[in-house]
Image (tube, rainbow, N blue to C red; front, top):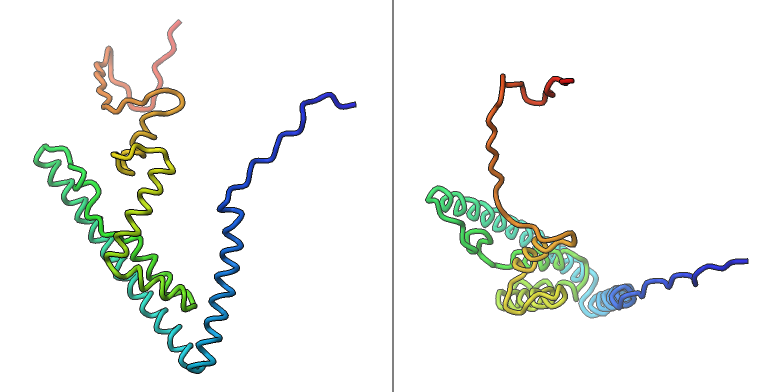
Length: 197
């Protein structure tokens, strides 16, 4: 005899989890079909050369984007240090660096490295700067909408607000100033004071 509450309902499955495996399977079938069509029309050696050229170009793009990202990071640190030496707070441009969409450039290189003609075409499209900028803006707006951020704020503002407003209360940014004035003889760090009755 069970007299409990009804069993809990299973969490609703998101659309992405439902359709992503189907889309991935359809993409793989389409890639294989397109490779066979091109192999029939131009020959197997041509398909092999296309795949190798895509892998080499993709590796080159990823290497170049990685170097650019490292150079941007180094420049950002240098600008922040210079601002700190001048006694100024670093500006948003100093903290974030140039927005050149290196992540999408690396994604384009990765798509070029994947074997397949559709992924190569998508990777080549991401190498075009206006396309990369448009995709980056769209992705940023989609993430901000998804996070429920105000439309006038940026993604960084949304993360800042998420850090400040915690479930246990508001976190105030600041600095702790300790005024330690020893009352007696100084003790080494980490030692406990003697017990007194």
